Image (cartoon, rainbow, N blue to C red):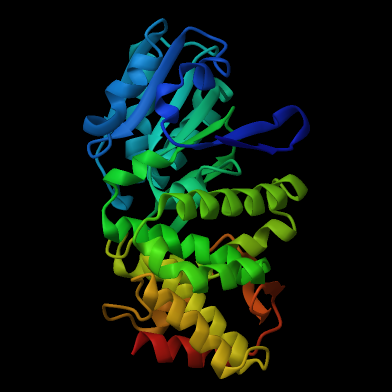
Length: 359
């Protein structure tokens, strides 16, 4: 097992990464102060891992909420189901929520914990590659709205993140590839050696070599933890982690949540960001081709499957957390491995990129 620490002073917490961690009860129990625990999971994960987690916590007062699976259920209505369960079981402010599942479960559970009785503790147990390398770390929580993705939420840090790599054994290939999109993001935005490592090892990674999987999860979490420690509330450098996300969120919103997996939309979004970076004079055509090639080798989409009008796409982009004073801020690439926050791009070039991908 490897342990990373996300340094946020009094809100600091460990990230445990290893195999068979769902057999280690102390990793969880030492971060739980009260007796009441609500485990939030979904219909896919519950049959696989709910009993295992319950066995670790047999001395506590346990309850569970099992949600429907999918991005389209990341809503205020679903959030209210968690609140109802907490109130029905008379959970108090000493309770702990445990998010057992992927990014949707983690985001909703974290938001419920941030809101219930104005804030209770929670723990992340991510079971997908995407949630293990990205969404479980950093304290971003929230739900979607029909007009915009993740527009309703809060920053609320977990007490710990427990990443059992063995949970990826039950992850299907499409979900695994979606997680690889976020891994590739870290290489593109600030870690060229990591990008090169991914290029060299992508075949074995897609074959799920356990030692390589452990390495990319550790490197991804370490990079994100370093950025979050510097900018917890995303007032500056943390925005770099949104590489491809303004484009990707627009894809998800216009096609309908769940049509593309989040990581699939981010894959296309990163390629759109790379293409705009090329048109702005930063990247060469060969560098854009390297990005495209790595995404394809990770079995990720490089184009939008489904018809989106340019106007609808632009409208979706304008309803985004990166919009400041009506101006869409984008994350572009000066080089592979070097991202920057850009709000002075040329609008005609942005329109060109959108037209190319929305055809």
